[in-house]
Image (cartoon, rainbow, N blue to C red; front, side, top):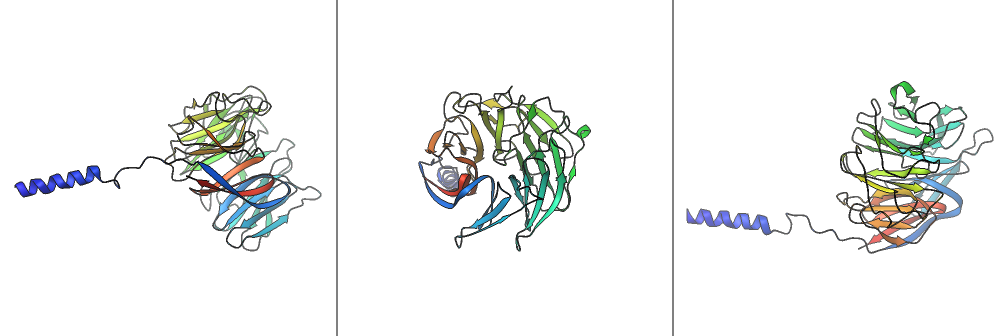
Length: 351
């Protein structure tokens, strides 16, 4: 009996004191190094990572990729009649890349990853057409978000892998108010996790539109982000999981205003709390959670530079004084690609 008791005590002690059985303290990033992948006269607001490539969609009808295994680049241009579309949204399935422009006519193209041929799969000619962001839940189902044409956000859905797209009628969506829209700043206006979707709006009203079931049903939640004029509101958002979210933005016309522009949620976007008031960055173009960070680490780019938080957005540290980056996406927990004015870069985060 005594031997059994000693063995049991040893087991409990090993469980309690084993350093491998409880989470280690977070070691935050201290610095970054930057490699330039692509340069040239261009404006890039939409990128994604896909295996060994970073794909981009840009102005002047351009799309392409950088292959970081063999350091090669590919670029192609799309011209519709005489229009060179300004592509600001990009998404992927296992076989295709999808891009859509900001402006009218709205043109959504499917691009074959293997032969790089493009096919127009959706067109919208309303003068108010302006699409902001696009993502896929899986290889069959995807969503694209645009500004209101009537009294609701424009929401396109595909259920067949992007071969065809249909627009959800306004009677099936929450109503927007006059002056409420979205911003095509960084392809981060729609965020998907599981079957869920969050769509962020800005302008005279800044809210979060939420679907629990891949766009079939919708709710709308208020945010405390600064709002009330055309260039205010939420410009970017991300969710680490189905509960933990972060949104940012501010006043585009007052880019140094560092209050009312950052908020967090721990209940799936139903409620939001302002954080880091009067500290950190001003206007924000794109925010992303760092992978494998338990929702603690966030990176944001915009007119103030690249900022980093290791405490869920409560405090921020500038890691890069580059004011020309519009969008950023992580390849893994230590490497990200960012793009903006005249370049695409690779950022390595150092602890």
